[in-house]
Image: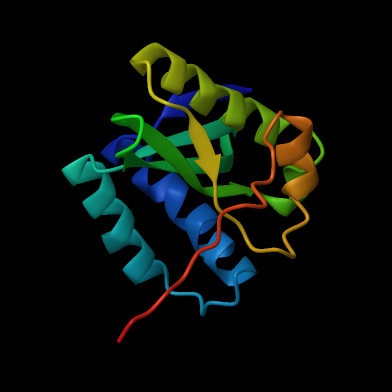
Length: 145
């Protein structure tokens, strides 16, 4: 397995993975919009995307965004997206991608790495196995009004 930080040259490999990720979260497939979105992320460099390959086949990715902690006055990453192609699950690819993100946080001396996911996401077992602790004290509130 090879994990690399994605650049524009990886865009065509990322699109089907990211589209499948969105479909997993009950969104309609839209590869054209996905390509525009990912191209923006890669061009603006406002996220870090790692892509995993096995035998030159793109099999998974993770995307990290920077958050700032006012209390610690340090940046941290939120691992917002993690997806492994269904044909390649249970091969430790998710673990490898998470570990790549952890190393980046340590190299940059960031506060840490947080994961946001749905309550029903079966990957929670992976996150807990990799040392993440569910924070029972924090709640998220959303509005679009």
